[in-house]
Amino acid sequence: MIHMKRSVFLIAVCAAVCTLILCLFFLSKRPFSSSAVSVEEFIDSRNGDLGVEGIIALTTLNDEFDLVFYVDTNNQVSANLLVKSEDGTYTGFVMTTSQSLDRVNRVTGSSDSLYLSENTLYWGIAQSPDWVINHPDSHQIVADDLTLAYYFHNKSPDEEILDLEFVYNED
Image (cartoon, rainbow, N blue to C red; front, top):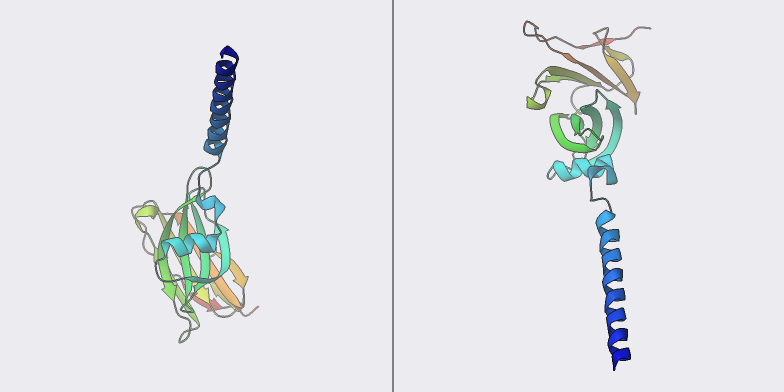
């Protein structure tokens, strides 16, 4: 009888230890985060009904923001911000524009949303690599026969809105 009680006690202790080990194993797994999904899936999850057809370019602006140019399912080209946390995972999505290039061959714009309280993002999209943005500090990416341009900088209180535009590059 004592032998049987001791066996039941040992089985109960082993079961408790195994349960504890399994619980610790599952609790140690990382929770689902934006780093576990693609940029397209992250934008889709934040963008409502408009899906992503394809990413054209993704570039880092600074420690807080990445800039993504993509084509949505309505065949519009978008330039939008991805907000990053300190560990580099995406935590937010800021729409700056979504433009159809069917009737025009180049568009420009700017954004200074709440996320960009001390910065202004100027952006441009042109349908030919022969167009360049007219600011010496702008960055240009040529992809899929598009010129994607941006200029991201700190704004001062007396700053005027820049009039960025595409000019034909004759080089």
